[in-house]
Length: 268
Image (cartoon, rainbow, N blue to C red; front, top):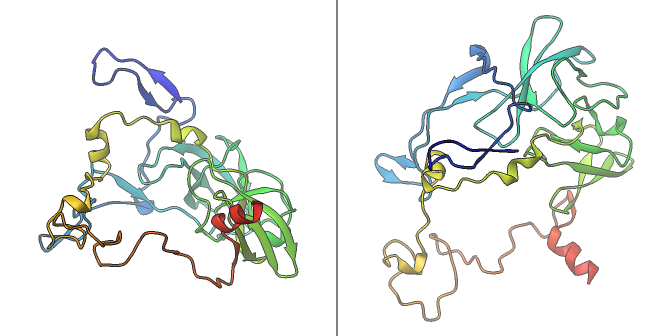
């Protein structure tokens, strides 16, 4: 991250991403992208999502989360890009048969590097392979194309028992995955994303977020806690479901060994 000062007071000391990390080349491959249309959280003129609004125009780029195309083929990293739809950066890779695709950019992966999909045994950052071929103690990301995809996140592969692999997520949760699940080596790049300072309300509004209204200040028709009659009413959501101290994880989930809250209790 870098602090850049402008002449205008509005843009004074805005925290922006350095030009060294994210290339200015914003080339768009049309088969791999499309334009997003925003409804502003409305359907038929009614508010469906209370805190969602319209955002600035953006282009969605299709990301290869599975990383299973052209096994054991070497792909060249063309350049890195900024993606407005996620906190992590992406990079454009080219395969020898002329196929292009976007992938999540891990740390220590730069322009001109070579990656391999579904490698049998590899130690290079950005390569994808099954959990069976990854040694214990390595940092991985993009597990099953669903887990560990945010900027600066990584998962630790603790051990492998038969066909199950035990991992520790960024939140501290211990979770089992099948050893045939595909993951990528390394940690997601853009680690300093959490230092971004939005500073102005208009910046948040351009991202598609609207202000939050306290339930106690609403009318009874809008929320169960509205109407200034809060006596004996427990905290609940708009549907009347109690939210205070309510567990959101299944008690006997087959893949979760310990949640973050359970680990804290064990340490006591």
